[in-house]
Length: 351
Image (cartoon, rainbow, N blue to C red; front, side):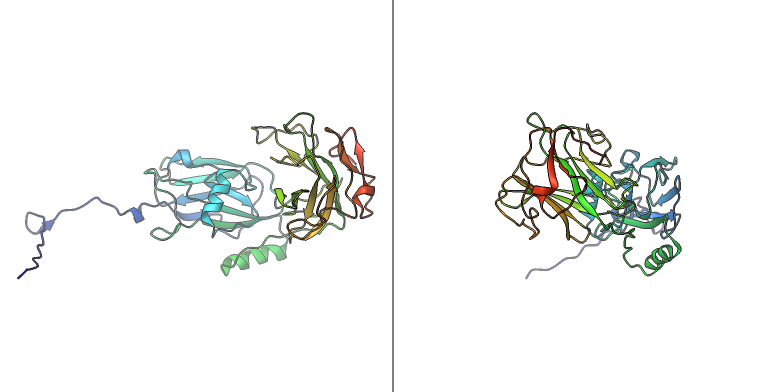
């Protein structure tokens, strides 16, 4: 007959005293934000400072824009991995910050180092931030990984500021605030092909519309004229308004650079290379509705993958490398073939 023998061993020292252990469970060593000042829901000013207090010392080398960022607009903090990757790859529109920390490495001060634009700003801390022991950040220790989030406003009127505070107090998602919708907005000029095999910060797409209107989160899609599929997507950052000229130039970055282009008068930089045609360029509003479209060359399909048109009435002809397709004096007859001409000397930022 088998017997189950339970043996309990207690290590004792002296008169019934047990061994004191210095072991701290991993869950108690995960760094998280204990306090933030100013509090979420506050309004910021240019050069404002935000102070974060953490539960444990941090790895100073991981305190950067890839781990702690003040993002323009609202952020889907439920998708932790996506936000962390976007910050690491610098694909979220961030407000420039200066980072400083105290000797304990538990207090980080963020100072705004650039001009703010009106709207919502979201402070996020991601698992890209590590403790001094190399443990990833988690605002919910012992549970699934969560980001830290605090919502702020800049340049809001009284009603908008009240809406921000109410959303924070009720733990509701903070929506973005937008300015006036453009009465007019069109694709005005494009250089899609350059001399040589590849672009090196030379191509651009120029929009023109109502001065002072808000084009935040509008998108430009590049469409393959053969099959109607999307080849690239350019998202206009939150907080973008058209200046007094009404012109907005999206310029290609130089190869290997995040800050330089050969395009003059640019407003937004991104890596993109339109195909040489036949192809199309779609301009969509923030709700995904088609605002304007330009088709060039003999496109095979009248509609793209998303059901929106690939050209208006008839596509325009292809132009030589280095030339641009330019709208004739802002004319919009609803026919690409009529509205655009071949321009030998492109004029980004000029009507």
